[in-house]
Amino acid sequence: MEAVRTCVGCRARAPRSALLRVVVQGGSLVADEQAVLPGRGAWVHDTDACVQAALRRRAFGRALRAPGALDTQTFQETHQRKG
Image (cartoon, rainbow, N blue to C red; front, side, top):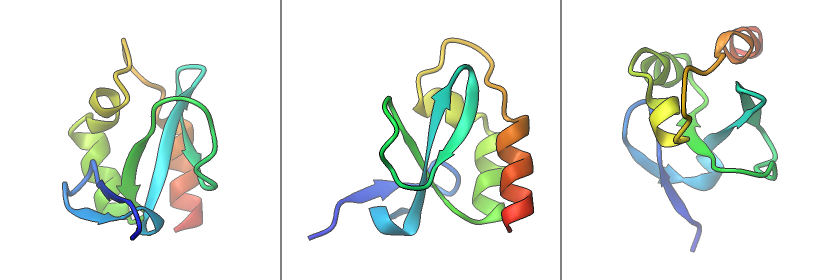
């Protein structure tokens, strides 16, 4: 049985393979496509709607327990180019 995670954007539960893991590196959000980077991770559907909802609600900061504002600019640009 595959692990189930909750999307920080839409709050729906989904299999781990259907979600994108996001971590903090150097104060910036980074997509962890292989799900192997160290540290706490947040999971989100790899769709514009879920990513934008998570950014709007500042859900990444809470899920990752980041002690301040996160730099989301690079993550947003990367995600927009991909999608």
